Image (tube, rainbow, N blue to C red):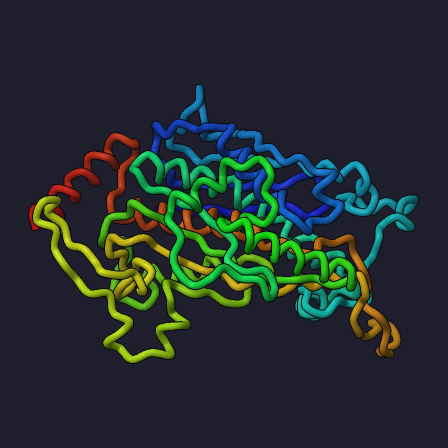
Length: 391
């Protein structure tokens, strides 16, 4: 079974990820992995931290001579900002450095600060925020890139684009997958939108938030094509693939909602206008659909259409004009603490969304087809495709 874990703090020495279950024989393209890490760092409205970091993955295990060997893959991403935080984030409790520990209080609204301090019995939110920080997602993107490389080996592609920033949004309609995929090759990320005119309006939303010492959220869309029908299951509630995808995307920091297909629009229409009618292409010996309002998932399973998942990202919580909070010591009203921050992170969240969707899809793929080596997985997959074509 494919599974992964991450470790590390925002200003610690680095981030670590371990992923197990990837079959032996997968070629690991380090440039591809690092390209995704670079994409996560980019975008209009990012803060000063991104000028310090230059994320790159170093593989410690599970890869030899450019390919996976079937054992757990471990990677580390160095935090370059660590040099400025050695005393504040020291593992040892050093008396002589205590005045450099950089405690953070009072708690900031919208962050994990207060809930985490109450949970762990801390009076210093630094202990909570360092792990709750979205910096952790760099590790997810690293292992997510491996999942994407695995899926690519079977002709399955995953890509993302930004649908909305603040009040600026793409017009209704589905953009071709290739136009979304092409964004990956762009050197300047900007806001990762397929339409230049809409992207310009998105930039204006970011500018407005910056001028007002505020932040702005938005919506990103992750799409996956080339998936076979039948990944996931309808037998039990916790086997449904749409549930796994929703949980994975909403686990991304600041994401507060998930949509699959055109779920919100569907909810306001009658059933006769929202189901994807079925046809059959005799030349290609395959079933077809007239639309994809279900987002490629029916009954908790892929149906062969593109999988389409949207993440709804709230404006991030660290504001340059701090909001109301309460002092831990006096319980009196005070202004919240301020930490260096971004204004807009929607494109970066989209890259993290790609990673999470790819990890879920790769796990579902391996649960169905298995295989200790890539060749074994491929034999099982091709046998299934033959069954589907002969249906």
